[in-house]
Amino acid sequence: MADSFQLEVASPERLIVEERVTEAQIPARDGYIGVLAGHAPLVAELQTGVLSYVAEGRTRYLAIHRGFVEVLPDHVRVLADLGERAEEIDVARAQADLEHAQKLLEEPHVDLDPAAALAEMQSAQVRLEAASRAPHDSRGVQ
Image 1 (cartoon, rainbow, N blue to C red):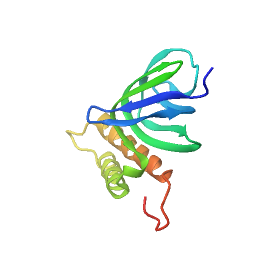
Image 2: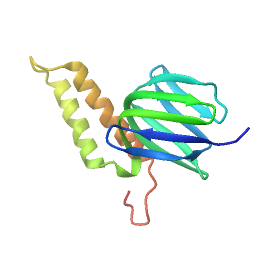
Image 3: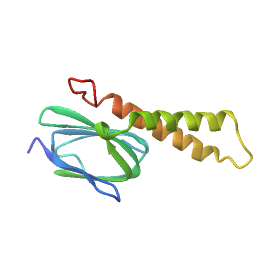
């Protein structure tokens, strides 16, 4: 049995990842799924969370927002509503989004949709978590 599998992560806008990996941790609706080569086939709904995978001995991270995953023994396809590589995340914007969502929840309005505000807050938190795991270059820039 091979010790790697093909990982594809795509959003409606673009193909985010397409490479051979040795493992992946995927945020499914009922909890994280750990995938190794030869995994039993399954289809699952994604939740907002940090997807991690190991390729060429390095762990990489993505912020994933909803969608579906298909796991086959030698291929994993992640179809996310939104997805960003950790190193592409604008940390200042994610922090501002988090603060905005928190403010909305602290000062509710008549037309406030609490579920939407909580989803916005969760999305910003996941983006910040993924970005915090991105490797930094020698200047401290992501």
